Image (cartoon, rainbow, N blue to C red; front, side, top):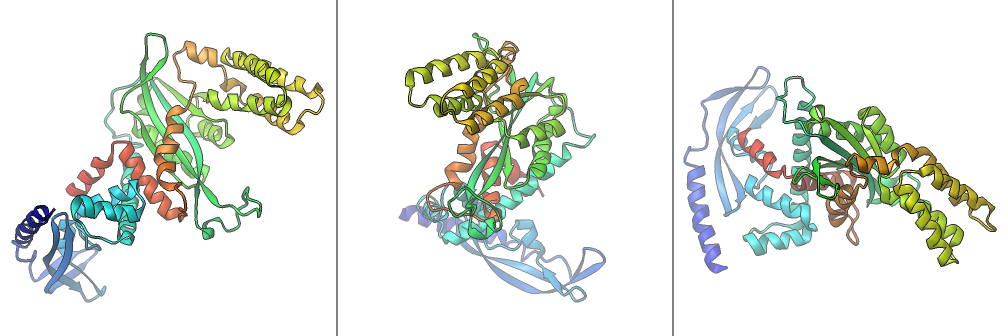
Length: 413
């Protein structure tokens, strides 16, 4: 560790000489900037900067505009250190650990692994700042995909769009006026709407669909269904939906999902996740046959076969017949009947399987755990919406293999 620190110190001294070899980035006595503003050179100002090799001092020429009462250092923009005392390399490392670990543990990781000494609060601030920048970058890319000037990409046989929601614990101010399921009626979470897009080229030897490797991309935020609908549509377009031969929307049956599917993905094949569908008839079974295990398993096995065969009408009839049972749970049966009735055309599983389609949204179920739960739902955590969204943006970028794209963009800008 001592040798490492010594090498960092030597490297940092060399880096400091290299960065300041331009004499401070002087660009003349005055430079035009913005709309008709003329910025005049005032003096040279030093800035303490933490780099991946250690702390250093950067010499920068400072320019000031008397009319707008604003000043700036052109060199800060060149080095990508405007408004921050951390180099882009350090910010990258801080936001990466912030995306994976609680900020206090991230602080320890940076010191242990890279000999970088920062406060936990700094890890939090930088993670949120970079998360916002990542979100803006990916949003701009997605928006650009709507242009008629984009270069066509190789078409794929099938594209899947999956959507789901999961709650994240938030601070009290973020739930003001919102009803919740707790005893006091106060909401304690906000829903993250998460979507993923992936493609399928073929099936395996048994005819089961195979997801194309490394094609899954995620996007999500705490936002309304209307805003999220536009988000997931832009992501699908960025991924080449316009050239997909078939588009499928997978969801758990929540109305907001199918509203988005109807509005943004008109004509797509809509499929209710098979395992969520099974949960609904199991709820009915437990309410009506909970004390009779033999009857419960017999009844659910019959419903499983009917559903697998794509015959939801028979499941509906079976639930309706439960109304004749003594002490049946009316509310649960009505909810079950309504669920299958509304989604029956999305439950033609035998047909979907013949076509080689996925009938389960396991990719997104895993995504909800990986993208959201593993980082934002740990014990004792409570987020602001802004803070949660920034971490979600970071994790979506990393897990979608787009992290390097963002930093290459910043380096080239």
